[in-house]
Image (cartoon, rainbow, N blue to C red; front, top):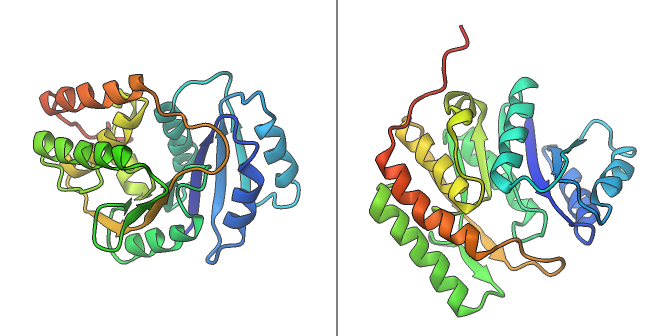
Length: 242
């Protein structure tokens, strides 16, 4: 099964080469698509340089300006679907997600899951180097999401995931409205409403060592209000291609 890992970047020059070196060394092999939003620090140039050594595995999609996490992933999903990848992953570039855990997400989907979620809040999962306030905010955000949406996913805001291509083909990506962390909830909610099986895989989430976090109060507010909006909308499958 062909695998593509989508990694959005904006000013990740301190992490990008180490991330690519780690990811290309994994077995079975993973292809990587970097979706860079015009990073002024040279992130895209570093990817292009690394790509010369691994032209079959490393791909770059450059966009003009900072357009948001959700739109970066949707652009990556469309790129992957067009090229008929079987398994399509979301992952951060800052090593908060351990690239070695891609193997376990892959196996969960090979074994029958439609969506595999790297989860902090199931047995065996956890967080590292987080202040207690952030842990509590993240945990109770997932409680809130499940109270409103009945999602049944303990780590509902998680952004480390593997999808079978069929899931992304079934979700009407043009109707996905959110671009921050609400995007992660919205994608899971759509998958669940369309009848796909979501499985949580325990991971340890580590705070970034280098670079700057993209979290903001605006992103948090979008997620809080977005959950209520999702509850009021009906999820529809993507239009048939036939």
